[in-house]
Amino acid sequence: MVGFGFDVHRLAEGESLVLGGVEIPSPLGTVAHSDGDVMFHALVDALLGALALGDIGEHFPDTDPKWKGAPSSAFVEHAVALVKEQQCRIVNIDCTLVLESPKILPFKQTMRENIARLCDLPLERVAVKATTSERIGYVGRREGVHAYVICEVQPA
Image (cartoon, rainbow, N blue to C red; front, side, top):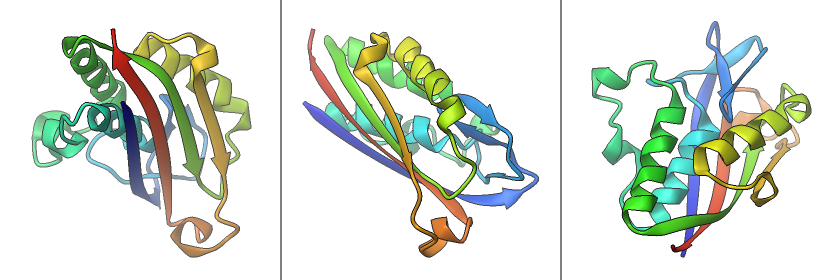
């Protein structure tokens, strides 16, 4: 079974930028109810989607104050637990971030390690890539960031 996830957040001054569980130094950060980690949010949707278990908003509504400022790693842990409850296992995860800046190369390995740990996967089954939008659109104007994630889930 394959799952696909997408998430987007606005960027603003004075907010923190958390991507793949890593706080990245940046003058702009994500505007969000939780920590705004678009990569982890897209990952949650991919895992839930692989098993037709809804989406992140159904499990963690932004109208619920208990999720205010919550670390997105908790959302990933919940999705992984649901995968296991369905007697399935995650086979691989492929993530792509789309942002103009900052460059994430120095942080990619830690992001991969975070995902591998949270999803109980060997590191070689987790890919993290990044690209820009060539200064086109909201990403190009540094108004937002988005992420795509695809995963494979199989019966255990």
